[in-house]
Image (cartoon, rainbow, N blue to C red; front, top):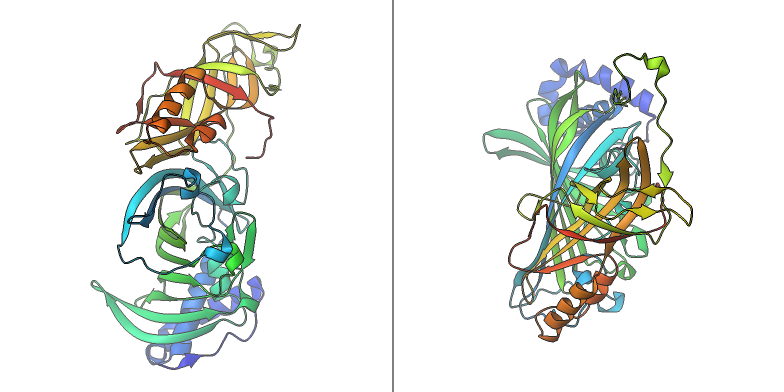
Length: 458
């Protein structure tokens, strides 16, 4: 099939909607023409996508991410940072995408659960256990491993509403029992908003791919995105996205939303696959909470005293905490909420007020990984961010502290060559390490957490 020239201009959102709505009203007259005219088919698909983008509905979905990490068979794990499995990019001058003859093996995996909201055309993110959306940058929430954003708004705008994008019509295909139109596209660097980030390096790159649209209604079914010309400084050899879309009814509007998203990344010595599923999509609106806890039956609401404002706890406080939420690898993910109980009372300052034992803490799992080399072990990070006792609320940021007993145990395991050398340093910086074939923490598990400087931002 022939190449379709780029769309002539980047239209304003209002003008584009008016033109597309007029175009959609003529579908009945143009369907025969569209079946034979690639440019007309593209205009129909383009119009449908932009109409979805302009619907004034704020919504939120739950994103569940399953990630796997593969290394070449025979690749030495001992001596290289375990954290590089999920974070550090390779040295740029050594980056290579050459396939190893021995194949790949699974070395680690983890799960994440996030809330993603779209409001005013912007995507916002938070852990699923959080009570508010805190950032528009997903990498400020997920600090290790592959993660993507832009599937709700950014990529659709970049492909279907940007000047300079070229399209090629590949004809009709059959997906199961469904017939679809198939297109290829290419977005040059001058028109691209595709950002690839690794460590301190962040670059905009051109990209290309393909998309499918249903022949019955021109709705987008799915698309692939492949990054081109990734600079060596980024340390990533290849990046490929595949997004499957769905129509979801939210607040009486039918919206085009991602259903599944697979992101594949390749670096030197490491290949990762990240699969996201989107569920529980609903209208996003502010919520008010009314509490009757402090109201006596004989008093009126006007007589009730408002609770004191939250107090921020200082850093370097040691908190002995017992988990009230049992944690099992099979059922939990980073992003799940966790409850705890303060085992020892604490005093704020020399003459400050005390916080009694039994105070309840709320937190979230921020990291939960299963590793397989050279033995099976788990990494777990639980961050507590609020504490409640009576009518008082305290804000904090507390992370795990390595106890002397646990430190000695880990050092012994490392000396026996059963664990990577740098796990001890990771444990010192706020990670629980569990060398075991299974991870299960019941309500009797307790440990020490230490507060760090508090910030409302993640």
